Every structure is written in C-alpha cells, then in structure tokens.
Image (cartoon, rainbow, N blue to C red; front, top):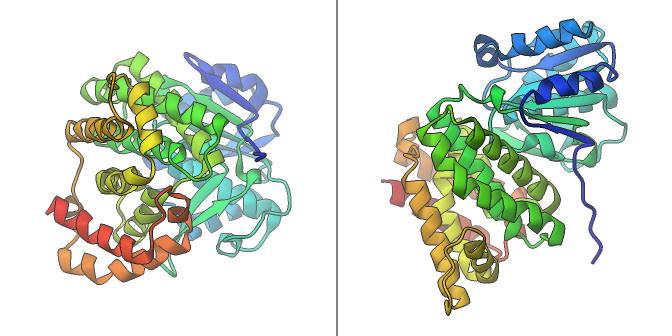
Length: 387
C-alpha cells in the first residue's frame, strides 16, 4: 500500500535555534501576527522573540488571548486582527493551543467563512506562511496537519485535518521550555507519549511513521521523569522537544486512536487541558487496546529495553503496559476530581461523550476497534479507577 509522508518544510532544533530561524523568517513576509498567550508574554518569551524580530526589521502585531483550549471565537478575533493590522504571515509561540489557533486563523484568512464550517472539509486555498515555536514538549502541533478548536456553541472539539495546516517552519529550542511548570511538563509529556503510542498501534501505521513513533517513545521513557524532577535539565528538555516533534510527525501520518477520541469530549465539556485528559485516560485505554496490538507493544518493550529473552509476545506486551503504568504512577497525574468534575455530572454526559468520540472517527483507527458500547464502558471504568 502506498502512503504519503508529510513533515514541516524546515525544522530548527537545538541551542539558539530561534536565532538561526530568523534569516528565514525575514523572507516570510513584511508583518507577522504573533499568536500566543498572556503567560508566555509574562515569562518574557515573547520579548525574546520580538527582540530578534526587531533586529531583523520584521514588523509584527501580538495577539496574546489564546487560552489552554482555543475556541472558534478566539479564531474569529485573530482573523480580524490579521486583516486589520495588514499582516501577511503568522508566528505561533506557545504550546499546542497557540499553534492550533494560528493554523485555524491562517485557514480562515485565505479561505473565508468561519472555522466552524471546516469540519471534515478540505481547505481549498493555500495558507499564509506559518512558523511554530514550541514552548512545551507535548502536542507536537508544530509537526502535524491538525488543529483542534472548540466550538463553544455546541461544546464540541472540532478536529481539522488538512495537509495545508502543516507549518512551514518549526522551532525546537529548549530555552523556551525551561520555565514550564511541573504539572504542565507532566501533561504535555504524557500527551507526547500518547501520540507516539497511538500512532504505533494505529491501523494507519506504516514503516516511516513507526520510525518516529518508536524513537519518540524511547526518548520519553529516558527523559520525561528527568524533566519532571529537574525542570532545568536542558539536555532532557531538548530531548523531550524532539520526542514531542517525533510524536507529532507520527500522528500526523498515522493518526490518533481511541485515547484522543475519548479525550476531546472531556476537554470540551469539563475544560480539562488536552494533555491532562490524555494523561488521565492513558491507563484505561492502553489496557483496552493491548489485546489487539500485542505485536506492536512487544516491539516497544524492546525499544525501551525491558524485553527479556524467551518472553512471549503477550508477555512482552504486558511488560510494556506495566512499565508505562509505572512511569505514570511516578508523575503525580491529576484526577478528574482535581478539576472539580462531579461523578453524577460526568455519568450524565457519558452517552454524549461516547457519541462525540465515535463521531470523531479516531477510535476506528485502533487495532482493537471499539463499538460505542465499549467507549461507554471505558468512561465508566476510567472514573471508577480514579475514584
């Protein structure tokens, strides 16, 4: 079977990667809309970027109103600013939310309408040039053709999937990640792990996506706990940025599966950050899919160095599941209750969440394909395991 493999046009990685990117940024246009959030401004990262842009005589306008779950109204506001400020390219500085918002803004700027009209539709016209500077090691949005935007009218997270959403320039510079709080480090790191795991066990996986997924998983097992206990470990931070990028490439080409399908409704209805809802769900979803992906999980046990001679495929797969659960247990992942979710409210919306998960079609990529009834049961099991 033939496959199409897509990655960003240029990737700048390592110490001073942003400075190296500037020469290319100068050629992207005359004025950039910088899409970011207020916290990134407070941390001084936006000034770090704009100082470089000032030195290169690149004009810009800062749009810093993107929160952890970008909505269609934020996209609308960004499109208006882009046009009113006469911008002709975009730069996202932040985690997955600003990067996803930038992609959505770019799509509407050249294709018109509302971002809510783009569900399951192809984007017809080319987008302005886009540069994504990652400040968290998790979503891998700098390497995907996806954008996730919440429609606040329907409380549904809209998954946009189009090759035109791939950024032109991706910047992976650990200097932009050193102040990431411990809980965000965990949520984004487990999000990257989820991406790689889902891509590797997806029905759409193929040899090139497997290369990136396997490499990402190995890096995460070697470095996630290190950045959790020491956020100033620049080597581990850079490795996690690379892992998140690899995970993004993997899902961009092999897609996500049951975990993301179930995660998005929790984020949309209860405003749990995307990476954290993935982290909460990973244990129960991994347990569900292992019987359909024993061969793949066996290979991953070899990748992380826990495979032992004479193990059966099933034993090696179980060893990988155990190692993953051990890692999750060391990371102090928050529970649904920590986000103020009440049991009765959660159970009341399980039918809607299961429906929304299946509508996204992500669960159908799982090697053990679930029915809606399985999703309902997994939501119930998920809650009971945290209770």
